[in-house]
Image (cartoon, rainbow, N blue to C red; front, side, top):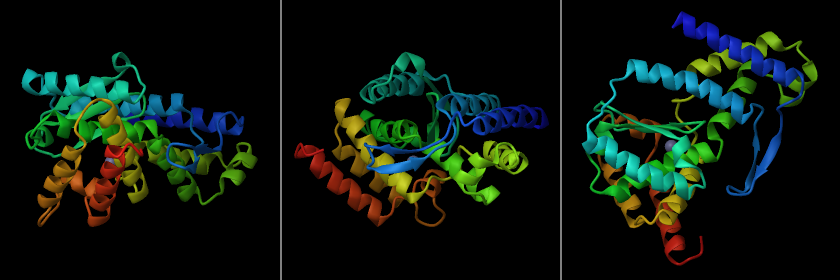
Length: 259
Ligand SMILES: [Zn+2]
């Protein structure tokens, strides 16, 4: 871990250098979700940070090569990734052997799915539900946005101050980015991000030719499993009434050809 931390700090320095130079900054309007996003890390930087986390994960978590899981995930992931307008050959998909009912995707095209969640899926459509949701987080730059927010929250500076600082705020920003690298990727997304990923994920699965009705069945099943202590996936992916209600509305819209 200390070795890794060192290399992460090195990457943090690179980000700060880029910030100082004003190379990556901005509050960009995202048409797909109809709102502006404050993002001041580049895609390349997020990909680099995510790549380090991905390598760590593959070292730490047991990987499953059972074709029962791997072939199915690859098959469905390829269709969903293509539906998102990406090239599946550039994405890496990995099944992890774990009881956890969880899945995640990282910037730069890395997808991890746990056997625990695969075991409760009735069909490929339900797998496409989860993959669509995760790919949507990546396509909507949610990690970069969260990362930027974390950095701002931890430094207590506005984006303008950080950019105007020209390196004076370097330590504060580096601390935020260093810590951000440590805690960034598998922290829960906000409610807003979850709802956006649900909505866009449904569009992807539909475009990939999967049955969107299975999305509702799947999330309801996950929700039912949250009696008592919620499974890991639910603690990061709240399946509450609001969410189920939005899914119902989106599915109705999609089927009526209005989305
Ligand atoms: Zn999510």
